[in-house]
Length: 142
Image (cartoon, rainbow, N blue to C red):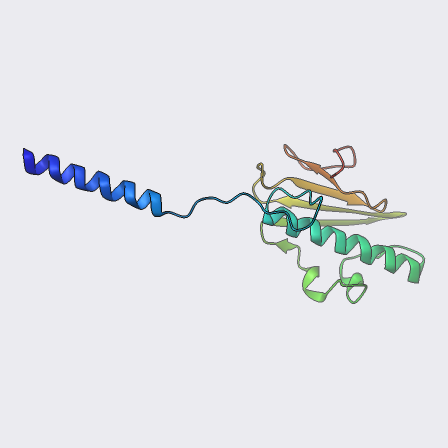
């Protein structure tokens, strides 16, 4: 019986030591003062949205209308060919052109506290929602 107790104590000690050595979850570190992101994934998603919005503004200045597709934005501002890909890691891009503008969405593959959904259109305001797909009526990102 003493051997069995010692073995159990040894196993518990090893498990506790391993738990102490496991890397701790670190809180998100903002990328700049006022960064509204809740995670690295959100920071990347918001950066992508800002890049598309800037490219659309530049495209409109040059062509007098917004780009009808993401592919049309290639080489406008810092929008690259790789950015046409709608799989953005933890997010999927949605882009829809309409008569007077466009709708841009970034939908997380997993909606949670670190992966909000985002929406923007030609007004340039980014909106976020923690519970469902973001729309123009979702709260603006601060």
